[in-house]
Length: 112
Length: 113
Image (tube, rainbow over all chains, first blue to last red):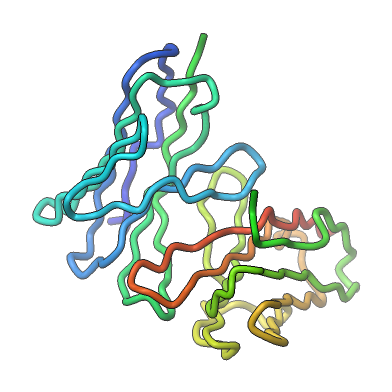
């Protein structure tokens, strides 16, 4: 079983749609959780850290369920510019030498 | 805009060449990382430096040799690479704190002939 699992998609949605990505992680000792976005042939960029209480940044909402070991990302009012691969990332250790564990990524294509 | 810079952007080298990748961060971060990423795969961790000391080596072949001259700079020395080492090499940095958010540079796209 992979340590971090995501549905690879692709998710093809029209502009303005709401889309949700899910991610599960296998190690209950996981400490920190993130969503990164990666455009084709570019570097991953931090989209959001995910907090236990859930957090929102504009059209993006992230949720964490530690009991179910599950993370989600909701994108409302999708834009063409949201087309990218979304990487679910967890860390096991405290910060100092934190090793990021990546999911395989979920591809989103927003169409006009 | 990234505050982690990497040079060169592209590199083509033969299997007998020696080259170096360079990374610099201007955020005062004390942890720096090298990742390798193949097409349609997530990044794979290679090395971690914490406070300028190597803290993690993910069993990387010795033809890859990291160096951290100071807290802002990270190098990756390459020697006798194989064609399968062709990939995007990403540098990242993070502050020492509870959340370990890592910030990536734009990467060096390496082709080994």
